Image 1 (cartoon, one colour):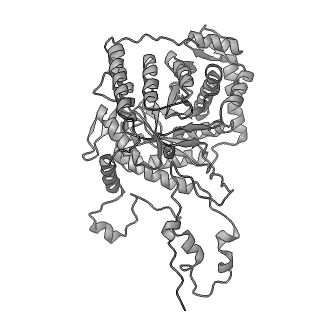
Image 2 (tube, rainbow, N blue to C red):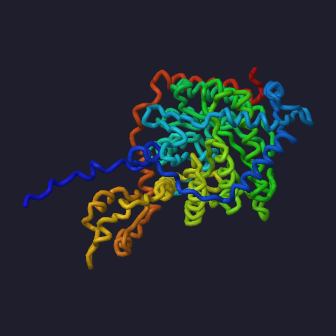
Length: 516
């Protein structure tokens, strides 16, 4: 009997899902993400009801006179003291109805684009932001983050497939007042992925926008998005209101970020922490509706809890995990895109505690349904970046992506026809289903599945050592082709030099305001 032609099953294997590839499903089918609820509908409704009351009865301080005036014209009422405005529920609900429920975080090529929400209802990752410390790949020695380390982070993240976009850290080796401008200048010239902007003072916003526009950002294809933060509790500084205004003019999506610390800038209870964050994000959505209508705004509750014994802010403790999950649940119930920490730990090293904390955090937030999981590579409550940890986080994200995809339940999935006729001593190794599905399992890149004897023979080299080797290889890899050209790089260099001359050399921050 002639043998059946051997099928090239490797060629038939779909690309594994990652930040830029969706889970493969039968045509027309989409499975919902496996979900977990920290609280029920009644708890979510109670939080929302109190958030609306807080905004309507107490309000928020908006330390930006033109924005304050614009809010009053839109229907807000004056509060006490004079910088406070009260936001009627009707105005907040109008803003919630109008804010876009989708966003494009464009890369420098279409292959690097991120459309949210994902069609497969999955998530994307981003690297940690704000870190000022760095762990050397080879020695694991700690040092201050140098401007050259920004390019290292970009090169590393270019090869991390679960990482959809990259945030710039705080870097030394350049003037402090323009560190953000230099960080973005380095980052945008070393990656083809979308980047996240975090301005450090009001003057810098215009430079950051001009740098990304020099690199090719447009309203139709924004290659950067920007963070706007509340000044918890319930206050908005000049700089962050300017972020919203100028991002709206440039078409850059905004991550509306609330950073309450339970026991410090928010009530110590989980519920009080969540209420503070939700109220601040609803206020930012309303500000966006008035000051930058039509701009995508991503709800970003980044929750912390003060350790009452030490005063240290924690973001991987059980209370902070509960707060993040509950805040995401509440904000998702309004149809908003959501973004919070999905990786990170409170330990200063890439150790066993770090892996335990980030596995708990990632699982909780992924099951809550967040669209963006932040914090890849970060340690010590987001103050240190570790390249080896970033590789481990990328692996953990792939694991989580497989875990939150619900299994198919059907007669075909049961392999019912074969199962109901299985003979004594039978097996499924040669089953058509086994052959069809064997390459769809999660396959680790750096996580190990060695037998003990092989592990011992390797010198007990495990996942951490494999991640270190991969980090070295990614950092040494060639840069992608679609980076800013010579002309764009020259313009970016000119903007960096001009910022140093106009901002750093004078060592003054004027707090100038845009005209609305």
